[in-house]
Image 1 (cartoon, rainbow, N blue to C red):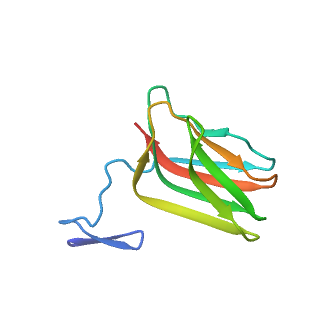
Image 2 (cartoon, one colour):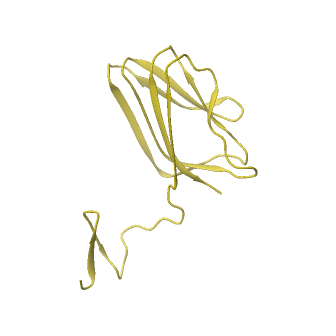
Image 3 (cartoon, one colour):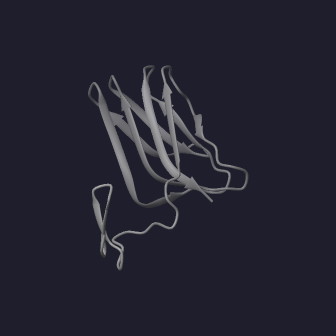
Length: 123
């Protein structure tokens, strides 16, 4: 194969990798809700561990506001899905670190179906 290897349509030079990650996003949480949610936990880390959020996605068939909060109910992300079948996704350039034992919860602005996907890891 030589010095270059093609893996998943991305070419890497094995001498100088383009991108390395110390901790890959090995946790993918997918949740679907169909009723109004108020501060519903969606990711509870293991005892004494911290969540490192690397990406998120939210979608809904109807317009809706989705708020993600950290342990003390402080909103850290508010997503306004303004059209039918809207999807919003965000990959953070560096992981968002939460305090040890801090939970991520969701609040929706109205009743209706909403899908939420969180990617990250725990340390």
